Image (spheres, rainbow, N blue to C red):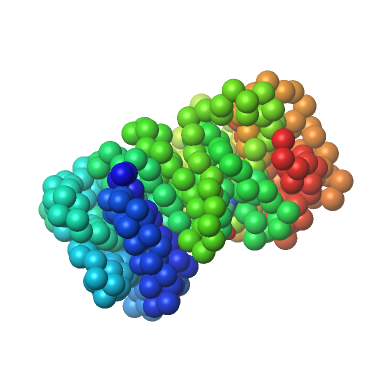
Length: 409
Ligand code: ADP
Ligand code: ASP
Ligand code: MG
């Protein structure tokens, strides 16, 4: 007998029929003797619908009230799923994040979990109940409702699994595991049996939305066995592990996956004087406006002047551009340019560490397709390029093919 935390995403609970199917699936495990805690997302499209409603009132809507609104999506699914269990003759209890209670910091819209009081859940499990918890939400120390950022139900699942010392956290979704790249962009993508936390973290941080990055961080930190599976088909899915077994390591691929991010925007300030403190004067106001900067590039100076380019989330583009224009006036820069039609494509793999020449191979593959690279960033286990958004599909497929990812290594 095991304690399992199973999380079902939006598509998996997208209709009443699917909620009933989730109930049947969970009951299969319950009948096999396992203690079951189920975390659910809002029905597919619901969170986007709520965001759109908020934007009709205030295009800049964010903060506390947005969280009050968005958490209603998950409250609907926990109740419906608990009813489906009860209808089938099982006792179940649904809880919102605040009821559990999941305590977070007060950073509305992207709160971090600080602690979980799982007394009620443990008591329910002892009494044989199936526990259903709303994903993506918690309360801060003043009992304000908070949310954990888009995709945050994954993090609720992993955090609950850590708190309850569950035997496994199973993330059920609309694909049957983690693939070499998003199978919706590259149909030839291959499912991985295992992937290391290190690689999964990199993939998630570079845009693979199959798992929220915080969920992966949490699972790694608290050593939660984590698996991604399909809620529609049987299968073993993908296990996220600390390291490849000896047999896998031997034949380990150079590149384990390709991630991409469509949410990027690029800003450039041309002709600023190349003197100490310039980077700070440019990026200080951006960070003061709570805008996260991703890639940064400063040119080699010519005639004491230099250019400075960086990327931000597309949602922050307008605000970042306005801030940069003010900075440009102050610094008497030549011009400011912005481009929000760019994407970032990255290749990821721990096998890259010990091999030279991967970057040049990546650039060769892209150049063969006539794709111009706008920015480059590298680390030990990833290489990212920024390209025009029209090249996203072409670039991902060419790299997938060029690095031979469709063949199992
Ligand atoms: P859920 O609603 O269940 O949380 P998400 O839409 O958040 O589901 O995540 C699943 C989606 O992630 C898949 O439908 C797929 O399009 C996308 N995805 C992106 N990269 C990958 C990858 N490397 N492997 C599998 N799926 C991926
Ligand atoms: N419903 C939330 C979202 O769409 C949380 C989640 O599904 O993980 O982002
Ligand atoms: Mg998700």
